[in-house]
Image 1 (cartoon, rainbow, N blue to C red):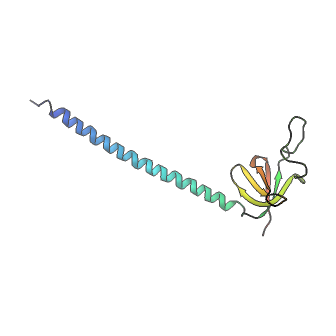
Image 2: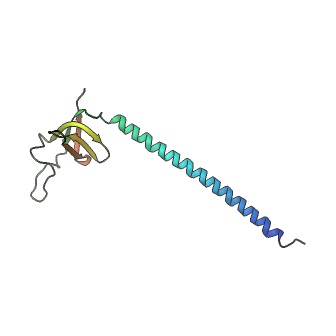
Length: 126
């Protein structure tokens, strides 16, 4: 006949060992996933940077046709004096997923253009 203390003790050891093993595997799995996702994000960022023009390059941003259309209800975000032939020119300061930033006509000014308003970005060769 088995003693009452043998069965629960053996069952408890098995459960504790399994729990520790699953915890260890979960930590390893999360570490691998974290490393992989960071690596993927950095690789995508490097690809975007290689495709973007260099800072300081002369650029012309051509707006989509519907952005500059005037109707009485919606005032347009760009002044008529700033926009020439549906485009804005300047030296490239910065680009990201939402904005293209060009230097303004005067020192210290910047022109922030939302990417959804851009039809074409012309970059002059150095």
